[in-house]
Image (cartoon, rainbow, N blue to C red; front, top):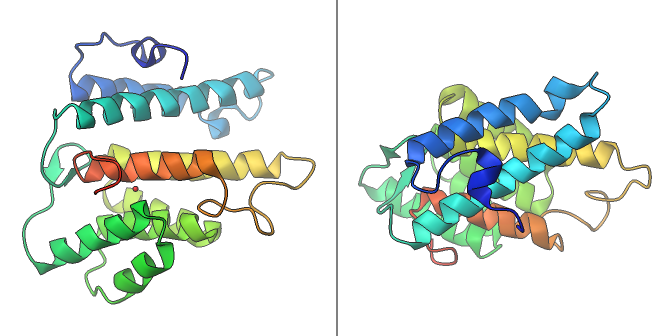
Length: 208
């Protein structure tokens, strides 16, 4: 993005991750489309909402690539422990970042433990193949299970924003027919990969 992402979020460049996340949460609530339905400047608020999402993504991506975070972590510093399930979930995110969404879903279907992260990954994978109704339901379930997790809420907000943009498109473009996230929408693909990469501690294509 052309603007300084720290200026967009209103935080200094040396702000902690928690300060960045706090600013992101506050601005997301302020500019969320649902909070501006009757606002005559709703279109501007929606653009600002998108700008906030992009700024947060850029900051988190830069910090992850700079080695500021490590290991397999997600949300507000919670870590995902060891075990065979971790290996499977690692594979799920690898599939998603490789745009192999159906393989990710097949692996998720074999996992009996439906954690918040499971629903988060399922939401992302379903968004990738264009199953946006299921994607939103699972993203919402992840948020319900862990309401303070910024990444889960970010996925839900992005799906809500994209859905609203599609509904407001008088030409009916966007997610219908052959155009869906993961099958030609480059911006959506990049956002999906960046967002999921955070939960893997960075490294965009090796970790959505």
